[in-house]
Image (cartoon, rainbow, N blue to C red; front, side, top):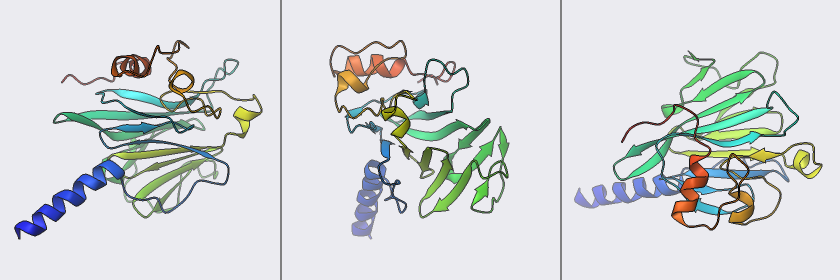
Length: 220
């Protein structure tokens, strides 16, 4: 019995660090940003860093300067549990809707809990935003962006980089800019557009803190 308990603990730790494996790969040519575990981040361009916060943070957003209405914003809420933090909720603002993907794979649309949804769930009955349940993940699909959430601590965001390559769109946030350069000085840019000095924990915290959603922090 003790042996089984040890196995269960090891499996639980591996799941916390690695997350459940996706069953739906990103479309060909798309890029993926990952926030998982306690948490570990991988930007769209593959740069990896660690940051343990206790607020909501902008993972990625259309930050093209000439647009007054952003095409999408993806935010992740972290909560400190013990000595580390993990993602407990993902918010997606897209097509005029605010969609919350919560613990246990529950979800809200514009603050209203969707009880016993039938999947695939059509958010606006117009096929602009569809939510699927595939394996261990809720998958939100909208034009040019997919968000995968396991309901516990693992989120992946897929984006179509074509608008970035064409200069039509610019991305910003914790996931970087998806321009193909895998380096801290290119990906880790603050909300004010400043490049961090190095990839030390202090500078990474300065970068991450600039992407905090106002009034979202929980005292620890």
